[in-house]
Image 1: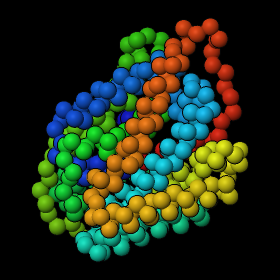
Image 2 (image 1 turned 180 degrees about the vertical axis):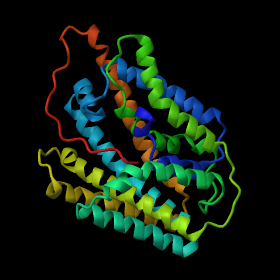
Image 3 (image 1 turned 180 degrees about the horizontal axis):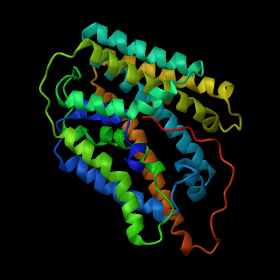
Length: 323
């Protein structure tokens, strides 16, 4: 029912409101309006469906841009798991127990990704619904993060973390401008409305039921696992090699896990909030979206070029989006 909007909703739909709220409605709505225009820009250039945004960047801006975006995605995935693990720890426990829980979540995700483990298919199918239920629990005051939000001025980059996946939903131009606009609205509107409603809240504080905190940690562990696996799958493209498969991805999983662990250790030493940890993946998202927008403008509308329709060229497999 959510259609293209389901590609955007994920762990960030829980983490970002919990880390930043309350945020004035003008901030998420203004960002959504800007992203709507950006989405239409990608569609005008030919879209990112079905090959994915990195392949589209390669068509529009060349192989160097394609490889650079793989590297930025890799860094964003790696840094984002520190925020996911920290939030899981704070939802499930307090004080030192929260830090140990965060470390356990990151370790479980890393070991699972290194072993090539995938969460059960049923859990993956139900995961978005579970995240939305956890959002409702947070809005009711039953889940909370320990540290206060960083303030509205620092909210813009972390907010972009919620929108990872939107870049993969831009279709080829529709038969009419109205059809193209409806497609963009269908991709942007569900996430925009949910985020605006959640970010406007200042939930009451209540004691977190232990089972609810543990459930949140388990769901976020599955995101940590699949996101580290996605980072590992990009590693051969980052290095510029044509190898694929578990053996080629495993070093990337190790590098991404070590990066997340270092960031989590720095957050513990510096007493950083989850909102602060979200700055790094938010900045990576901003770089990706800026580069895609630049490449789309440089490329122009397909009908305006004399070289005919773009020719498909082989690209590395694009891992799924989970955050």
